Image (tube, rainbow, N blue to C red; front, side):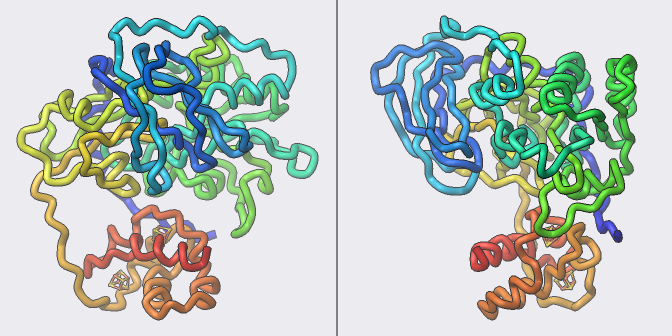
Length: 424
Ligand code: SF4
Ligand code: SF4
C-alpha cells in the first residue's frame, strides 16, 4: 500500500506547560448536539436550579450521547448554536452560581458485565475526543461474533500543528489512560493493545512504556512524523500493517481505534461517576505570547477563552480545532463542545488568491486516501454525480493536505466537502 502523507511543522509551544484551569465563566452555553448523532431534547427549563454533572439533555436514539451541566447555577433559557456538524442546534444557557455544587446522584457506575460497561460509557456522555464526535458507546458496540477484534489501537498521534492536549493528557494522566485501556480490553475481550505516539514525543513514549510495563499485552509504538496520522485507516496501517478497505470499518481488520484522552476519560468516569463536562484545550497561534493548555467547562464561550489567551493583537482569524481540520469561528458567544481540542488565534492571515491549476499533481500525491482531488473538483464543477462516485469522493476525510500542498492555493479540500454532499 502506498501511503501518501505530508510533513507539517508542529509549533508545539504549549507542550511543556502544565494544564491550568480556565477561570469559571459567568455563564455557559451547552449545545444539545455534541456528537455526530441525534440531537438531545432538553430536560431542564428556564429557572431550574442545576448542579455540576446533572443530566440536562438526552435522546432515545442509539447514535446520540446525553449532555450534562458543566457548572452549578440556574438555567437562563435556550438559544441556538452551531453544532459539530455545522448545523444550528438548540443549546441550554446556564448562569453559574460559582459554587460548583456536584449533582447528588453522581456516583461510580456498578459494572458487572459488558452490557453494564457499554451502558456506563453511554451514560457518561462520552464522544471521541480526537475531534470527530463519534459516540464512544456506539464504537464499542460492534458485533464481536461477526467481526472479532483482536487489537485495540490507542490514538496518541496528535499530528495537527499547535495542538498538544493529548500530549498533556499522557504526561498528566497516564494512569487513567492505562486503566481505561485495561477496562476496554477486559469488557470487550480484546487480547492486545497498541498505543501509537509520534516519535518526536519521547517523554510521552517513555511515560506510557513505564506505566504499561506490567501489561505485556499493551505495547507502545513510536510512529514516524506525518499528517494525517490519526485517521483510523492510516493509524491501523501504521500500527499493524493491516488495510481497511474502502467501504469497511476498522473492525473488518480486527481493530478498534480509540483516542488516548477518550480512554482516560472512560477510566475516570468508572472511578468517579463524573460525566464528560470538561475538556483540555490548547490555546496558541502566531499572535499568542504564551501558548497554554486550559481545562475548560463544556459550554465556555469563545469570549471567555479569549480572556485567557495572551494575544499581542486582535486576531484576524480564530479557529476551533487545528489549522488543517478545524473551523473558523466569528461569534463571541460560540461555545466549546466536547470535540473542541484547540483555540488558535492568527493575525494578518489574509487568504492567498487562488490561481489556475498548473496540473502539477501534488494534490494527488499528498492524499493519504489515494484520491484525485483535482479531478474531484472538476467533477464537482460539472455537477457530475456519477463521476464523483467513481472518484470515491466519499473517502475524503477533509484532512486539508491537498489544499496545503497546492502551489496555486486552490481550496481543493473545501470543495471536496461540498462534492461529498452532492453524492450523499
Ligand atoms: S482533503 Fe480529502 S482529497 Fe484532500 S488530501 Fe485529504 S483526504 Fe485527500
Ligand atoms: S496541487 Fe493544485 S495546481 Fe497542482 S494539480 Fe492539484 S489543484 Fe492543480
